[in-house]
Image 1 (cartoon, chains in turn purple, brown):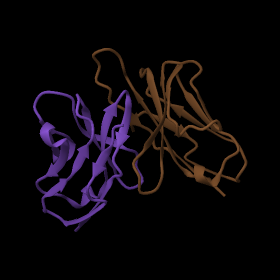
Image 2 (tube, helix red, strand yellow; image 1 turned 30 degrees about the horizontal axis):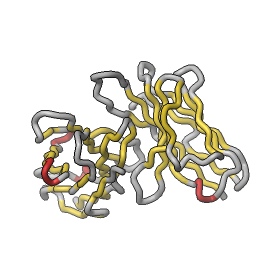
Image 3 (cartoon, rainbow over the protein chains, first blue to last red; image 1 turned 180 degrees about the vertical axis):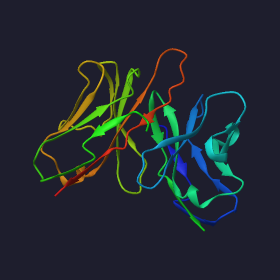
Image 4 (spheres, rainbow over the protein chains, first blue to last red; image 1 turned 90 degrees about the vertical axis):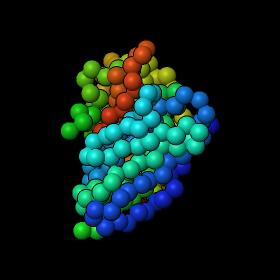
Length: 111
Length: 116
């Protein structure tokens, strides 16, 4: 069965620091990959997605992610975080229409 | 506003009672999903509809759980004889699916269930 691992449950950074959140998945075939974000008190929102083509995908709010097939990874990056990026970030894989989710990473940005 | 509406936002019930949640998807979306999320975890898939047909059910969905989407529009999730372990956030999502389409799911704000 598919599984998704997010390496860090909690990350604390200062404003302007660079961010990288790890995500690894277990399935070796064709995958559709997503990062969702949940800001405090809000619903899950799509941050970015990968289906095919360029393995470096750009999303909203300056986020990007790189799909590395050989490493089964889809890490999320942002060069300079802001206080407003404080949220929980979830990596997910599309498996037969359902999404398989990682446990999430809570990101806290210190002003 | 994602366009997926869930009602109620919060539900507190006593153990043994039945509860029903409603989800209104984005109007043109033919696919509807239910997930459950507990503290510190990502969402877990429960079930999935394409139009009015329930095409997939997770093993998490015990006999006490039933979901319907009678006219292919809104959906209801009912939990009978609630147990404390049912306490969770219940999330609904919808997508526009079909051959060659990218399956992007849009989520509602969820219904938080507390079973006392």
